Amino acid sequence: MNIILFGPPGAGKGTQAEKMISHYNLPHLSTGNIFRENIKNKTELGKKVTSILDAGKLVPDETVVELVADELKKETYNNGVILDGFPRTVKQAEALDAFLLENGKSVDAFITLDVPEQELINRILSRGQGRSDDTPEKIKTRLEVYRDETELVLNHYMKKDLVKEIDGVGSIEEIFERITSALS
Image 1 (tube, rainbow, N blue to C red):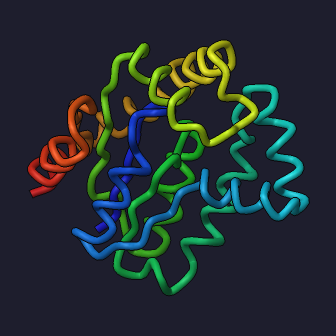
Image 2: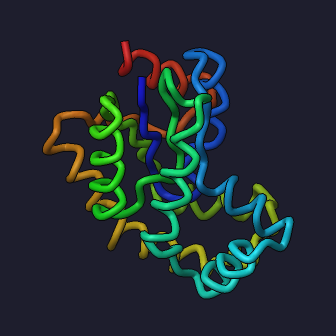
Image 3: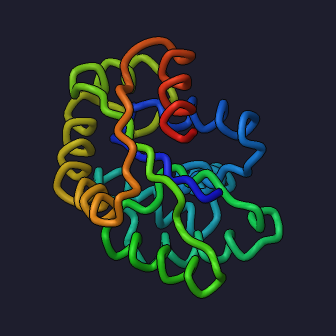
């Protein structure tokens, strides 16, 4: 099963992905985790990503698609994957669809977590990951970028009738219950 876990920064994608990994016995592919690992290890990609994120922008499609395609070629993902933070643009979604199709696979479900903006801001400020863009102003910029560019991906998958909208407010367990119900 190939599942896309979607939502704005602070929606709880990483938290829910952790629960889904064990429940569905699927590997988790988070572009955010891949980027953070590269930033931490000060790789060329990490340095490039840092300067982009410091400006409150998204990493270019070509870089992200290449990274994800390389990762998805690994045997680990033969039985499916939980994608978190990807795709973020229609171009990325189309590239993912094409890659999966070439490999005899497809997206099975698109789970989107709906959370009010003020709740997102509060969550990001309280999680203390220490990202350079975790300030109220930069968070608002990230949410604007999300609305302007990323929500178009939601429409892309709505046309394919794959979207399951989940209320992302409540306890971790309540939200997880909503996800598993939507997927059954």
